[in-house]
Length: 138
Image (cartoon, rainbow, N blue to C red):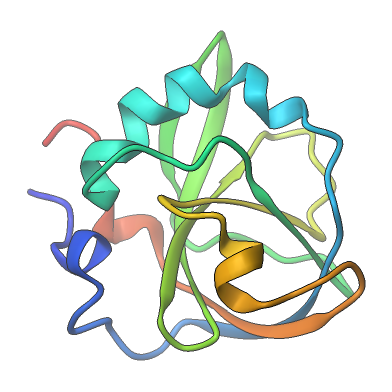
């Protein structure tokens, strides 16, 4: 199975998924430690290299990830699911098992905060999709 082309093209994004209202908060920069590994893993899915940072979103209550695609990075088993932000921006949520389940760390090809025009504390609508459309072996 090949990963879904809409992850690269942004066209024909599937409907459904979990709709959430989340809050944007600046991060601490710790994602940079994983970025070289994530770039190798995620860039082919998204159609190009990742922006050198992540978008940090917080839900009001715990959020489960639907059928997350699993990959081991630096000895840690990560789960990944697609996220649609503001209806059209595409990213991938990455989560470690021990992370707070209200936290959604989003990696994308672009600096999403700028593209979305969000600043610290802003709320935005997102949609989490199933990780079934991700295939790291492709």
